[in-house]
Amino acid sequence: MKITPRKLNLFMLFRLPSAYLCGVRQKYIDPFKSVVTVKYRWINQNPFRSMFWAVQGMAAEFSTGALVTLKIRESGKRMSMLVTSNKASFTKKATGRITFTCNDGGLLDAVLEKAVKTGEGQTVWMTSLGVNKEGLEVSRFQFEWSIKVKN
Image 1 (tube, rainbow, N blue to C red):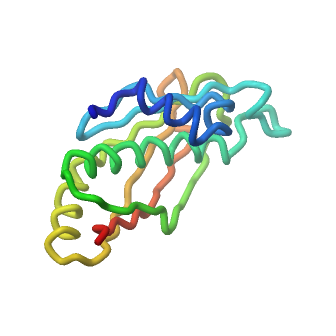
Image 2 (cartoon, rainbow, N blue to C red; image 1 turned 45 degrees about the vertical axis):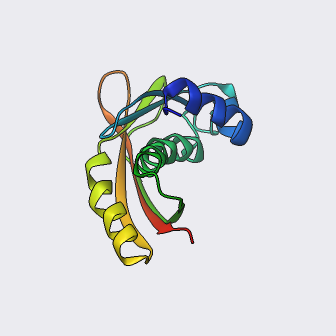
């Protein structure tokens, strides 16, 4: 099955309904890049009239996780994936539509290859950058993904 933005959004609706209800949507994915958007609305606001940090985190994590899922699917191996750590920084109020982009698909090839070759879990840090419609950075998230081949 080919992974597409539409299929990822349907997955989100049924398996991650809180992210879907908050407006998180996959817009683009290829083996190197994943783009997810979320729009500031009443349901995802904080008391300071901007987007709640956790909603930004859901969108950012999904942009990285979609790439991991795509690469695992392409490998043909059964693997588990888990976020083991994360870091975030916020530089501007998140209002309007925020676009999270992860360009770290290229990092995954070597990590997956090593996981298959050694049979041991591997980790990789992936970054998702959130920008507003003016192209200004509002937040930056980094996620440490642990990937292990299933027996």
